Amino acid sequence: MVDLSINFGGIKAPNPFWLASAPPTNSGYQIMKAFEAGWGGAVWKTLGVPVVNVSSRYGSVNYRNTRMMGFNNIELITDRPLADNLREIEEVKKYFPDHAVIASLMVESRAEWEQIIKDVENAGADGIELNFGCPHGMCERGMGSAVGQEPEVLKTIVEWVKEAAQIPVITKLSPNISHITDPGLAAVQGGTDSISLINTIKSIVGIDLDSYAPYPIVDGKGTNGGYCGPAVKPIAMHMLKDLAQHPEIGKVPLSGIGGIETWRDVVEFILLGATSVQVCTAVMHYGFGIVREMEAGLRQFMEEKGYNTIYDFAGKALPNVTEWKHLNLKHKVVAEINPDKCVGCELCYISCDDGAHQAIALSDDPTNRIPNIIEENCVGCNLCSLVCPVEDCITMVKKDDGSEHITWNERTLNDDVPTTFDDDRAGGKGHFVPKPSDALKK
Image 1: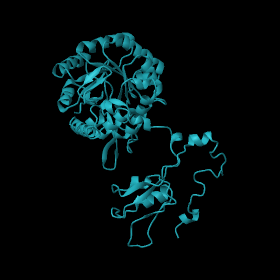
Image 2: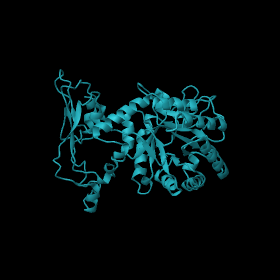
Image 3: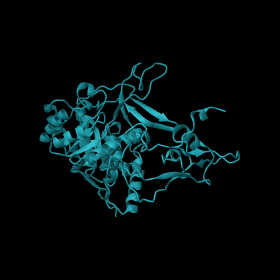
Image 4: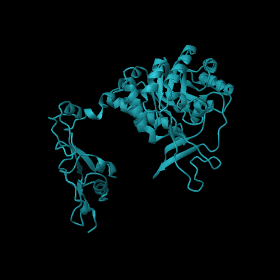
C-alpha cells in the first residue's frame, strides 16, 4: 500500500506536498485552508522585522496561450506584526498537529536570530527555514541572497541558528550564484539538518513600451524581482541534481522548489533526490486544489511502479545524469514520420532546413504534403519531433545495434580526437550541406 508520509530531516508530514514561503502562506487562514485541501506542510511567509511593501508587486511572462509561464515578484517578507504570526502558528498547530509548519526566518544580528527562534519554537513550529535566497529588497539590506551569495557568512549564521534551535533547521539557497554547491556545502558544514532550493531568480520580465519602466511598475519606476513559475523548473532541477550528487551535500535531505505544478513535476524532483517539494506560483495561479491532482498522480505512479514510499525511488535518476564527455558517441537515432498521423503542416521541414541539418525534404508531388526524412543527413537532433504539433507523429528510431560504445573521454585518453581545424576525425566531416547559392530564390 502506498504511504506518502515523510520524515524530512526530523520534520514529519503526512505527504511531501508543502507550500513554499510566499504569499500563499501569509496567514493562518491560508495555511489552514491549504491543509484542508490536502497539503502536508507549509513554510510560513518569512518572519522578521515587518516591512512596508509597494504596489504593484507582480509581473509575468505569458507565452502564447499560457498565462504566467514565468512569474516575477517584488513583494518582500511579512508586513504583519510578529505577534500576529506567532499567534496564528500556534492556532494552526492546534487544528493540524500532524502537519508540518515551518517558520521561514530572516533577521540580521545573532541576538535577533536567537530571540526569533525562541519565539517560533514557543509557538509550536516544527522546523525553521533560513531564507538566504530573496533576490530583491531584502538583499539590499544585507539579508536574503546577500547571505546566500557569501558561503562563509551563510555558514556562520547557520552555526548561530543551530546553537540556538531545538527544532530542525532547513537552509534555503539562492540560485543567483555560479556554483550552487558552494553555499550548499557551507550550509552542511554549518550543521544544517536539510536544504531547500531554489529560491527565485533575479530578473526583469519586461518593459512597458509607454512608460519604459520594467514590470511591475511602481509610480513610473521598477526594479528587479524574483523569477519563478514553470519557466524556472529546468534550472531548479539542474541545481537540485548538483547538490544531490555531491558526496557531502547529498547526505542531507533536500526539498525541491521551482516550477512545480503537476504530479509529474513532483515525481521528477523526487527522482533527482528531493524528499519534499514546495510549491508557490502554481497555487497563486490555480489555487490550493491543485494538490489533489498531484496526490492522485503520485499515488498512481507509485502503484504502477510498485513503490511503497517516496524513498523507494528518491534519487533514482541520479546515476543516469552524467557529463557530456561520458555519453556514447556510437549511439545513433534517426527521425521517422508516421504518414497516417502527419497533417502536412511542414513545420518539421522548415525547422530542420532553417534551424538544423537539412535532413528533411518535401515531395515533388504538390498533392503530397508529407515530408521525407533524408536518413543519411539526419543526425538525430530531435528538433523535428519537438516542433511537430501531432503527438507521436515523428519518433526517433534507434539505428545502432548497441555493439559499439565509445565516449569523448575515452577517445581523448586514446589520443583520438580532432586536433586541427580540418581534422578528418571531426564529426561533421563530409556531412552534406547545400551550396550557399542554393539558399537564393530561383
